[in-house]
Length: 479
Ligand code: MG
Ligand code: NI
Image (cartoon, rainbow, N blue to C red; front, side):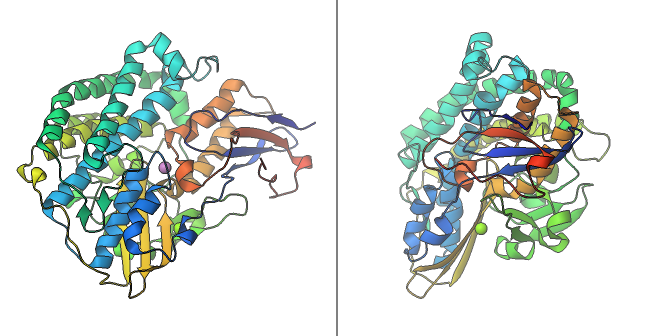
């Protein structure tokens, strides 16, 4: 008799997904698939719109990541205008991006994942949430809420509103930063750094308790990709693409964003609306790479800010000699280090005299037929690629969403974890939560990757082999 376990409603991820775990006759795990069951249409319906609309339009892709889409889009549009944007606009865009990084990482770590880490993977699901954290570890809950609020207020002070602002525009930003807003943000920074640091220490102290999960969450080896700065410094806004193999050997160095198509291709799977990008020269079987906090820290020489670099030194000690940390569990660790780096960079940027300049936008018409904009979103490398006609009307759009880059690695990781956690058809609620917790490590933004109407449950189904023909997956929920 087939057993189906549903985890309903969606718990602690951004967006909607379903996992199928296929068992063989002995009750072992035969195969495993993550289905993203909604379609996203931005690549199609942006066609025909004027290029000036693109940052505002594509920011609607997601309520969590509007800033990231706006930045990647505006950078693509800068190329279409063929302009160099004013220095203050670069500083302001970078500042906005760090506000987004802090608020999004705080949401992922504190609101979504800290219940697993502090209350335990096997804790009662009734309390395994941010309210349970607020009851048992109030300081952690308040720190998380404060850090997210700070990131969101930064976005609001710069861009006018927290969600779907329309401030980043082709050629720069639409208005300068006021001295009052600069002072208000600077005043809060020291306290935010204290909050971030004490939670990093807390996580470092917790790591030994999770050695089993750290092992179970280690997928088959993958490459890592991110933008990198000068001398391979941590970089979120600009710079060339770098890709290292699992052993840390460079596969791609210094590749200009406009040439991303030489290294990335997208596969389409029959049972998911989320595409599966892969490293083109190695094909979809071998060319699995990861992006996001773990990838970024594995790719760099240093962060370039003192507190984050101290933490990076400790992060490097996770593995012997030059081996790169591979466990998805360490996304949490990397995420907290990036919050600290983001806060330090917010301070550096706010103290740049140029940041208060009134010159924040270059204007021009359509001057180039094609533009690519890439930035590092909280979840990883985000690519917008547009083609226009002579009047600046969009003719083609390709977007590669940060979460999509991790799709193949997440699927392989789930299979491996399911095999470790489910044997002879036996499993506990905690085992299924661990499979979800593995996905939470990547902080997937499925709202970015797909779009849904109405509530969709996140379900884990365990299906015996004789009820499911080979490779055929159950139809997506229709609601
Ligand atoms: Mg695409
Ligand atoms: Ni998103």
